[in-house]
Image (cartoon, rainbow, N blue to C red; front, side, top):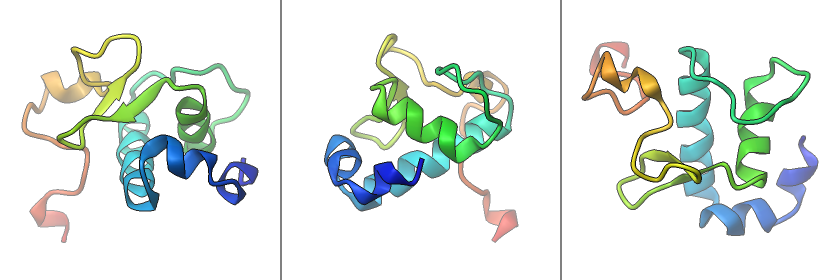
Length: 96
């Protein structure tokens, strides 16, 4: 999994290291909250799942830094937004 980080392909695919970090963090939060993985891996490591989803062009950040799927560009990956529509996947102010 870490081999992807040694190559600049994943950085270029996402649009930079900051965007890569943002995408990984948001997707890992979504997976941790119960979102279904978009890849079939024999691991429970959320980082490995998120990296595989990026490398297989399953997820990306839109212009507003929301995580989107490649298959359905009209909906957010995190289906839990139905429960908390203002949740962007990051910590809320009470966590800081």
